[in-house]
Image (tube, rainbow, N blue to C red; front, side):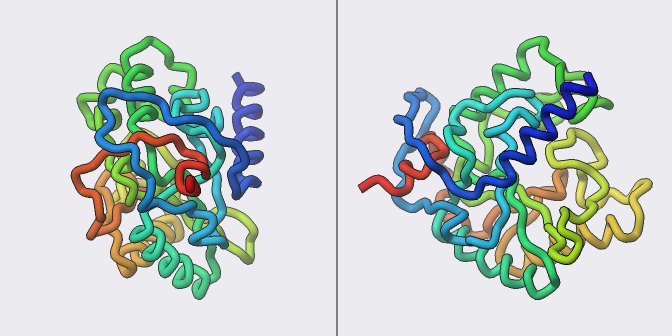
Length: 245
């Protein structure tokens, strides 16, 4: 299992080094999709070029343990409105000595369906890393898995801060996508003062620039005035989706 963990870390590091997309593939038909029109979306790496991308659902280092359906390239897409706000947030972060590190942005409904299928099977390969305190059977009940995601509306981003002086992520006292109370933004528990301060710094930057937090995930923020509050998109995550002529 330790070798498996090292393999996952290596895969994650490789993904973090990639900040652009390179291939294309057609959209997947999905009866639950509300819209496949990506005309109001942009590539996050083009809109916020200083952001570091570590797209976890393109890698195998995530709670499923495999690449997620709909993530066809290691890039991030987001609505133009959210991109503008995130660019301002990146500038504020830079003034404090940080860069934004992105784990996920737009998430197609196809990916959400992949999560649902996983939640209903008996695979627990990644339990010790992402949900050690929970039985997989309660993930729906406790809201960690749902049939719709705010990410599919295009104006939500999962992120952390990267310390430019130290050359690494800041210590938030818990990993992205950990299912449990430890991930709650207001959790203090056994966190250090530095870890609590780091969470508050990220929160302050995002709130200042028009994003609202989620009370169960310190890394999750949605644009307050999102342009598509009732639309769940299902085009794939690749640059051709936003650069189609």
